[in-house]
Length: 133
Image 1 (cartoon, helix red, strand yellow):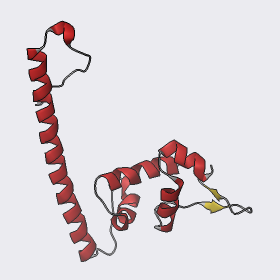
Image 2 (tube, one colour; image 1 turned 45 degrees about the vertical axis):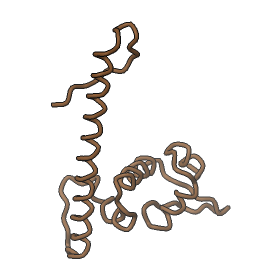
Image 3 (cartoon, helix red, strand yellow; image 1 turned 30 degrees about the vertical axis):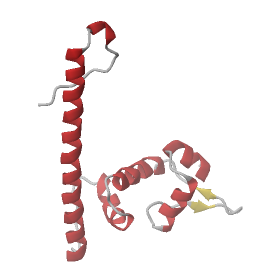
Image 4 (spheres, one colour; image 1 turned 90 degrees about the vertical axis):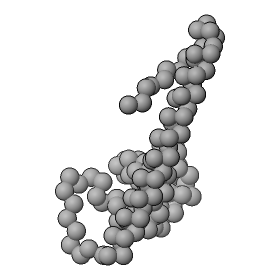
């Protein structure tokens, strides 16, 4: 598929896809006419890259993590202490963001529940709430 197709299927701009390629996160074949040709499996890979970026992981670390996303058992031949420290830092930041998101979700649930108790049933719009355990 061409870069426009990959962009359309993933919601990622062609410019960002070229950046991912520059960073070594995705690869494309070059056709005789100079166009890039992308394999279908890259749709899932680009979604994973976006998810990691959205989680706050920088591209320099994503390149190390991507190969591990499809392996049940991960074997590291040469453990880099600096990379490990960066990964631990990113994990801890992610854990903090998850906690904040959970707190915010819980506050929204409580607010929606309070609105439901205050409003007559006929005025409620759709939108189920889920109790938090």
